Image (cartoon, rainbow, N blue to C red):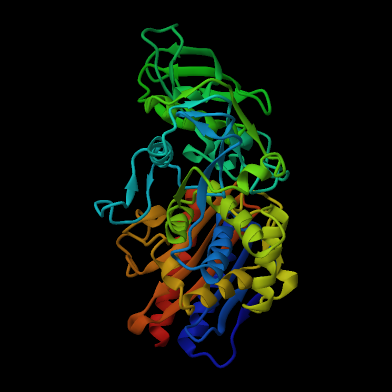
Length: 488
C-alpha cells in the first residue's frame, strides 16, 4: 500500500511515481517493501506499507539507543567493584575475592569515537580496567588471596542467551552471552591461516590464552586458490570447539571472534591473570555465579576496589557506528535494571516499549521487539514507527549521543563506502541493517539550515544478494533527496 501526502507539489508527486515505478519493477517487485519518509516538520510525505510490520534487523539498534539516550545522561556511568568475604590480615585476604559487574560492556579493545588520536578515545587493551582494580587492591595491601576469585554477574538476570537467537549464531561474537560482567566482547579471537604445506592442518591461534577452550583442528591445507571452507563449531554451552574444512595456500587468513558460554567466568579468569601479573597470589580456584543472593552480604560492605565505566555516549558509538550487537543487548538489560524491575530482556523491552508509546506516541500495534540488537527474526517494527523514533530523538536535547555515533556516508562507520559520488555524499546519516533475506536503512538526509528528511526503508523476504539490495536502498535515498530538493 502506497501513501503520498495530499497537497504536495508536482515534483513530490513525481517522486512518489518514481519510487513506485522503481519498486514495482523486476526483480524488486517480488519482495516486501516498507518505506516511511517524513519531512522536516514530521509529516509523512511518502509511505509504502508504512504502518505494516517488518523485521528490522540491525535498524532496531536505533530504538534501544534512542530510548537510552533520552532517559540517561550522555555521561551516565556504572561501577565495577571488588568485594571480599573475609578480612585482610597481614597482606592476606582471608576469603574469596568477588568481582562484581554492573553491566559495563567497555572492557573491550576498540575506539569509542571518530577522532582516534584524542586522548582516551581508544582502548588497546581490554584488561586495562582490570589492572586498575588490581592496582587499587595492591594499594590496600592485598598480596595474597586465600580463597577463590569469583566473577559475579548477578546484576543482570541469570538468562545469558536470548531464546530467539539461532543455534549457530550462538557460536559468534554477535550473539555473545549477556551478563553483569563481560570481557573482550565475551569472545575469544581465533586466527587462522594456511598450514606449512599442502595436506597439513591449518594454523590456528587462540587469544587470549586464559579463555581455556579445547580446540580440535580438523582442517587441511589445499593447493593454490582451490577454495577455503574453514568453519568453527562447538558442543552447545561448552568450551569444546573444533575447526573443520579446508584452507587454500593462497588464503590471507582471518581473525574471527568466537563467543564463550560463561562471560562471568571469562572475566574472572582475566582478572586472575591481572592479579598474577601484579604478583598477587591466589590460593583458590576461579569460579562464577549469577546468584544475586550468594554474595549479598559481601556487597553490603564497602568495596576493596572500584572503577567507573566509560560514559553512555561511548557505549552508543559502537552500537550504531559498527553495529556491535553485544553492546546493544547490554544496554537493553540496563534499561530494565535502571527503570524496570530487573536487568532482563523482558524488563528492558517493556521499558523501551512504554517509552515509545508514552513519550513518542508510537502506535502500540506497530511495535513487537524481542531483543535490543535486531538479531532475532521475531523482531517486528513498522517503518513509520522507526521513522517516528528517529524524528523524536533528532529534536531531543540529547541527540548528540546519537548523532555522533551514527554512520555518515563517505565519512565513518558502515556508510563510509556508500553514496560516494552522489549528490548526498556526506549528508546521509543512517543505520543499515541486515540478516538473512532482510536489508534496511534508516536515518536522515541532512538539508541546509539544520533541517533533515527522516526516512526508514525495510526490505523483507528478498532472495537477492545483499549487495544488490544495498544498491537499491541507496538509490531510493538518492531519489528521495532529489525529490525533496526539487520541491524546495
